[in-house]
Image (tube, rainbow, N blue to C red; front, side, top):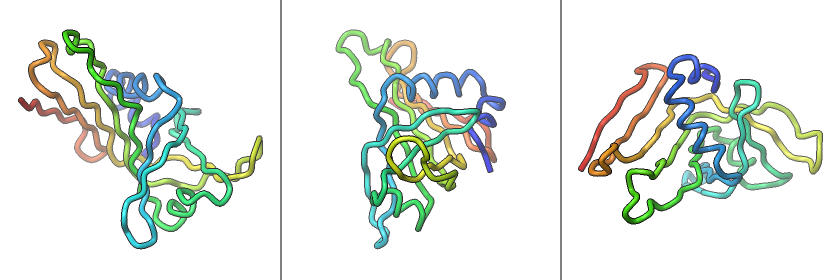
Length: 151
């Protein structure tokens, strides 16, 4: 299992940039798989606790049922548009995908399910310093950090 702490140890500067994007806004978007295999996206709150990426599901929520049936997920940070004329300042967007592992029932507040992430891939998409090319950086436990630039 690959926890968030493993990403931080392997690529600390990259992990810091990704976490900053996730921490910048309360709401994120998660993609799960419906029972027929089609995708479902919904809003979610997620956070980093004790070296783990964790997120919950309210009682009887479809995303929780999706994750219990098929644990694959993709989590996307909030997205903000680049400011015209200030594109080089755009922080980009981040994505984390992997498998949701049931952590425990939620004991504080409303009932529900708590999951922690077994991370398969972490991505940061942003612009280069001149804001002339799209930069995609991604990390996997198997291949480490890679980077491509696109026009």
